[in-house]
Length: 530
Figure 1 (cartoon, rainbow, N blue to C red):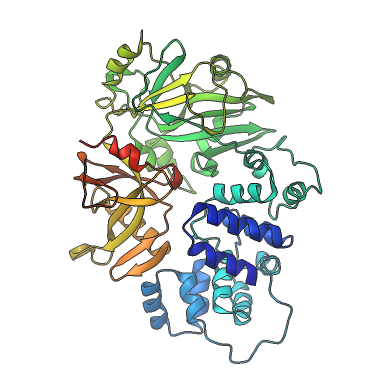
Figure 2: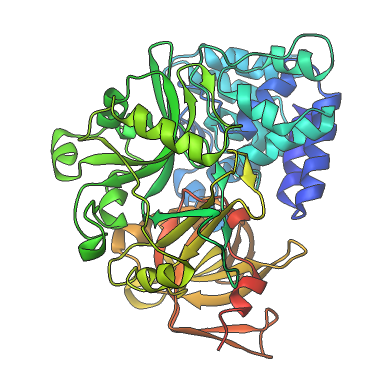
């Protein structure tokens, strides 16, 4: 537990991505099996100990500490695990000498506990540990590390540590179970590469570059609308169906009607939407409801019949990765498009349709058509090179996204401050930033409205649970949450470190579906400056 506690401590205070990669890699190379496998499960959000829940931890600490003192401390500290780790009293009777507690031994014991057994066992473990080890144990037990490490970053660290392709790790990840013994055996040359055959695994998405000032020849590129939903991947293999978000999260349970309707062997890429007419309008017959309608469905573990009826979901198909067991990713887009259209004829038209292509004689004509995207509430246009394979991530020149008039930006939440008046109990004033070319996050604006009361409560919880440092009434948070910021205009400013100042910024959307490293850059915002 000591080595894992040291890793978490260093990750919390390390901002550099490369430094985090080295820290995780060093740990994975030096830690024994199965400790390192369980650590990877925790870092990637794959660890679930059903017997240990936050309510159990709060009840457990109430038996050792004055409940009022604990709650006051929790409000000041902002994190339950950190508060318990710091406030936990020394045991009245020193515990008997025992073998040092390891990550694996702790998880093996906690994994088998019922909720009634968990408090006593967890308390006995805490009695044996120092404060930072208690923090690490509680973070493991609750599955909420929040140390500024995404699942992709952890997998990248593993790949770089052992000199294997991160795409190969991603390819098999969802087909393996913690503590990932076959994966580490392959990484160290002690075993074969794991196979994803007959397992509904997630494959990383192909992404697009902003079009910016580029103009393309429509003889080489196909154009289609960019819809305002969330990107999803649908996988059906060996009788199993999974829906994955852009970040690789399994969202099957949130959209059971879509999963049930996808029973044809293959892997498809598309946009998850809710039926309606807010998007599309007169320029596109196959419309969709606004993103706000879809947001009613996101993140729900249980979906009521009323929710299914009020917000019926469907997927607008963009691409096909597998047709049955045949891997189509190396084929050019034109061939994949033809296969997708054929594949779609076997699907329920109530749940799936194919994104239509935009008929434009040339780029100038497309520009005129795109001008109506804002009025139609469509995000913009996608341009896909006709001979492009389906590759992971962004490759220059293959796919472009050409959004409607750029009056929004995806920024990363950096700081939060308590509000005033009826918001004095909430962290409701948000400072957000964009990335420099060197990977530094610089503030570009501050907003304190644009969200609903429910979103305010969600943001307040996020701030309290992801605090890195405190400066009076201001909290610095982990740089993991992307906010879509709407603004009237943006101007160059010598008063701000970023060189930019937004006019009338407001939070228009909480982008839990988008990784922080994909937020906008300072250079991209400067190109919008007037």
